[in-house]
Each structure stands twice: as C-alpha cells, then as structure tokens.
Image (cartoon, rainbow, N blue to C red; front, top):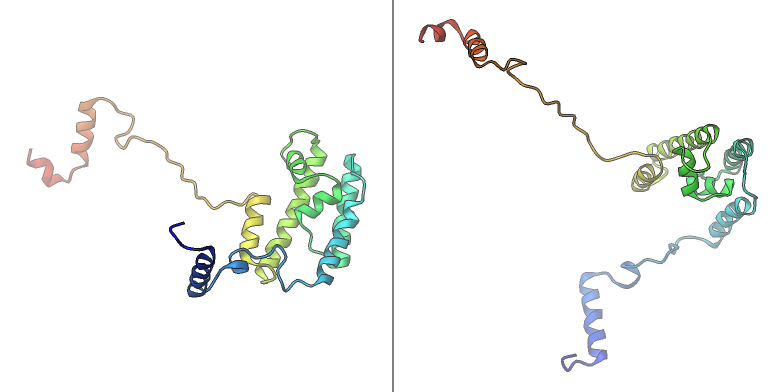
Length: 189
C-alpha cells in the first residue's frame, strides 16, 4: 500500500469525509430512519400481521369479500392501503395479482376486474394523498409507474404521406406545380 499504514489511511479517509460533509450513515442510511418510533413499527407490523395470518382467498367470491374487508378495515383503522398490503390480505404475491389483472394464469374475468377496480381505488387514494401533500411526490411517481401503469413518455404517430398526392405521372406533377404558381411566374416561361 505504498508505505502508508492502516491508521494513516483511516485518518485520511476521515479528513475527506469531514471536508465533503458526508459519509457513514449519511451515505448509507439505516433501513428504518432514526425518527421512527418503536410504537410506529409495532402498529404497522400489527396491521400487517392481521392480513398475513389469514388463509388465501380462493374463489372469486372470496376474493371480492376479502377486498371489501381489506378496504373497510383500512378505512376504519386509518391504515394506508397499498398494493403490497392488499396482496397480503388476499394471500398472494404481487406477481400473482398482476397475472390476474392482465388475464394470465389463474385469472378469471371476474377476478381480473376485481383486481383492476381495487388497484384503481389504490391509485385514486395515492393521487389524492399527493395532491393534498400527504405523501412525497417521488413516492407517488414511483408507485404510479410501478403499480398503476403511468408512464413518462410521449408517443408520436408519424403518417407517411406524399405531398404530391397519389399521382406518379411526371407530366401531371409538373402541371400541378405550374398551376399552383402565381400568374406572374407562369408568364415568365
């Protein structure tokens, strides 16, 4: 290592961090922010465990009933409904719900429509929360793109057309061009 001792390297690294004003936990924050209270963690885990412990909703009728129960409980308890929590309430992962929503494996027309409608409710909830300043716009953008199909792109439809029309005869094209010229220009020929 070029003759430098480990302590010297550590000191030089600490000096760089001091100069730049960051490092350690500032570069790699903990998973749970320091301002999160244990009561919040317990409350959120308790809310999630109630869904985790339920059996899978199997039939379309069970899925419809479980979705109604999920949204009602979230409303009554003041919980934030999310796609992740809704998936857990139904007893499936998010990929399975996506498959149902898009008519793939395990889907039925009823089931697909139930998931689409539930996700529209979640999307509407998130949109209301962001417009009222209750959730971070970056969080909303992430969720809207990943769960609700919003995109940051513009599409352009280019329709090729011939400005000279359908005519391919060179004499006809020449005559049309001559006819479109002002009278003074025609007389010059």
